[in-house]
Image 1 (cartoon, rainbow, N blue to C red):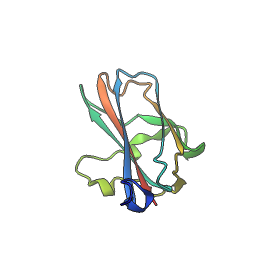
Image 2 (tube, rainbow, N blue to C red):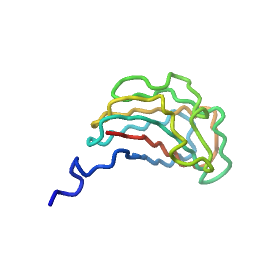
Image 3 (tube, one colour):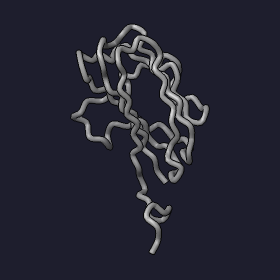
Image 4 (tube, helix red, strand yellow):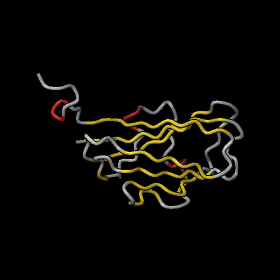
Length: 133
């Protein structure tokens, strides 16, 4: 019997999410993680913001950095609202599908710029990568 999680048993698509709570952020917020080593490609990126207190306004929230394995995905000052979708959009329709980057434990570095205090309070950032073999 093969071991659970062996490469032959993997689903073709995996959604890898990273969730972080941001509290009263008035500066750059950095997020760094590695993609799943068992998947070959990053084929999509989605981001969602959920207010935990107060009213959320992402109109001026920007990426100052978004890289996968050192390669720029979104340029400095790219408005996050171009990627953010409402809860009414199904998961498989939320992704920027213009992405085709290596996964296999690739390092993902993201810096969000919230210098104008987009929200005074707390919000959750959910960054989801669509990984494929």
